[in-house]
Structure formats: C-alpha cells, structure tokens
Image 1 (tube, rainbow, N blue to C red):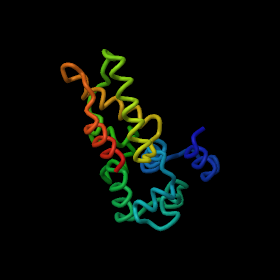
Image 2: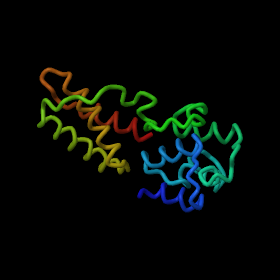
Image 3: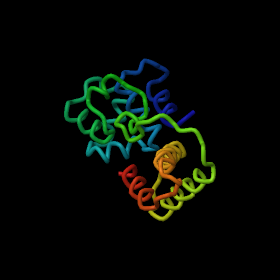
Amino acid sequence: MPYVNRFIEQETKGIKMESGLQKRIKNYLENTGFSVASLERKAGLKTNVVRNILRGQSKRPTGETLQAIAKVMECTVQDLLEGKTSPIKEDIGIFPHESPMVQFPDTLSEVLQSVLKVNKDKDYKFTVHQTLRIVEEIYSYTIKKDPPKIDIDFVEWFVQRVAR
C-alpha cells in the first residue's frame, strides 16, 4: 500500500470518509512522489497545514491555503474541492492525446534512453509513471517526423518543462 494511503488510514483511525479535497491532494502526492512536507514547503504553508487537511482535522481551510495548494498542484481551487482524481499534469494538458501505437520500437527505445540520460545528467527525480508519460509524449512528437528522428533539444526542453 502506498505511503499516502497508509498515512491517511493511520491518521484517520479507520474512518474512510474522504473529502474531495483529501482525494485530490492524496492523488497528487501519489502521482508526483512528493511528500506532505514537500507540498507544504512548496506552497509556502506552515508545517502540518496539509497534514491536518488529510487527517480531517482541518475541515474548512482558508481560501489562501486552498489557493497556495492549487498553485503548486497546477489546478484550480474548484478542482481541489471537487476532488477530481486524474493525474494533475494530464488535467492541465501536458499530456493531451491518446497513447500512440508502437510503430517504431527502435525509436521508442532511443527516446527512453534519451529521457533517462537527461534525467541522470540534470539529476531530475521522476516516478516511473512520470518517466513513462514523458517518454510517451516525446515518442508521439518524434514519430510525426518523416523519418522519425529524436530531437535531443526537444527532449531536454520537455523534460525540463515537466520538472518545473
């Protein structure tokens, strides 16, 4: 069971009622690999603000708190409150299309190697899921060329864009 799920279950002492806000934050943490503390820091919030929301101890966070969390999560306050649970980056159109069929396996392999090299060189920390989505996006872009050829400048630009 992922850490965030264990955290929620332990902290709520078995109560399984999650608000939309709790679902959205939990999903964000699972998809990005962020910790609760790193979300709080990045949002400029005091320690335990997000933790208290996840525990159900803060049932009505302030507008400023919601706005700070939404900004980090790259969504709207309304999205937070509705608890949409699809991955955040997909919601905002970073990965806007359907997954392509693998027509060029060698190209796919080259894209993967290029992304992994950029990640290593720049010391980016992505989850496996994030890495595969980045590879998918770059592969989709690459196969539109005739013949398909990897643009390393695009790879570096795209990976850096997602890392922000």
